[in-house]
Amino acid sequence: KDFRNNVKPNWCPGCGDFSVQAAIQRAAANVGLEPENLAVISGIGCSGRISGYINSYGFHGIHGRCLPIAQGVKMANRDLTVIASGGDGDGFAIGMGHTIHAIRRNVNLTYIVMDNQIYGLTKGQTSPRSASGFKTKSTPQGSIEPAISPMEMALTAGATFVAQSFSTDLKDLTALIEAGIKHDGFSLINVFSPCVTYNKINTYDWFKENLTKLSGIEDYDPANRELAMQTLMKHDGLVTGLIYQNTEQKSYQELINGYSETPLAHADLKLDQVHFDKLAAEFM
Ligand code: SF4
Image (cartoon, rainbow, N blue to C red; front, side, top):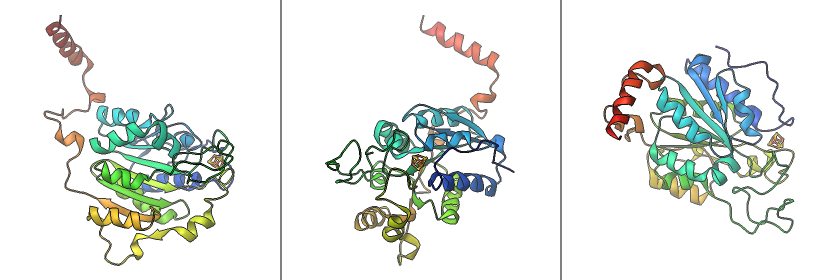
C-alpha cells in the first residue's frame, strides 16, 4: 500500500505541511486502506495542495468549500474513507459556516486543519488564528482582533471527535489520524503546522515551549466534555492529543431513515432515472 505519488510538493523547505502529508499516508496504510479506498478533498491555500500529493482519489476544491464537497463524496459513496483538509484561513474564516455545520451534522469523515496562524499562499496576512497584536503586511500595527479558538468552538458545536497535534509529533499525529478515520462520525484534527516563511512568531521552538501534551495530564479523560473545555481554557487551547470523543452519538448516515444499502455511486442509473421521472411527475 503506497500512498506516495510522483508529484513533488512545492511547499517551502521546513513547512509543517510535509509532516501532515506523511502522517495521512502512514495512517491510511496502518488502517489497511488501499489507494482506491481513500478520497482526499482539500481547500485553497498552501495546505490545499495536499490532495495532489497523495496517491488516492483527490479533489482540490475552492476556498473554504472542502467540507461540502467531502460530505457529498461520503454521502454518495460510503465505501470511501474521506479526509478533508485545508488551512486555518480556509476552515475558520471563509469556510467557518461549513465547519460548524459539518461538525453538528456528524457525517462520517475526518477533517484535518493545517493551522499555521497566517495566510501563507498569499504571502503573509493575518488569519482568524493570528493572535492579537500579530504584525503582518495587512496589520502593520498589530492585529486588533482576538484569535478564534477552534477546539472550544468545535466542542460547543457538538463535535464527537476533537483532537489536536503538532506537525513534528509524527507518531502522535499518525495515531490521531488513524483514530479519526476509525471514529464513526465527524472527526476534527487541528494540527499546528508552522509556516517557516511568513510566521516568525509561532515557530517550531515557540510551539515546543508552549504546547502541553494531554497524555501528561493526570486523570485527563477525553470522554468528559466539561473537562475538555476546562482544560482547553486553562491552557489557552495549546494542548495536543485526543481532546474529546463521544462514541455514543450516531453518525448522520445512521440517522437517515431508509438510507440505501447501495451507495449512490454504485446505484443502477436506469432505476434512478425511473425514480426521478416518478418524482418529477408528482410535481408537474
Ligand atoms: Fe508552508 Fe508557509 Fe511556505 Fe506556505 S508559505 S508552503 S505555509 S512555509
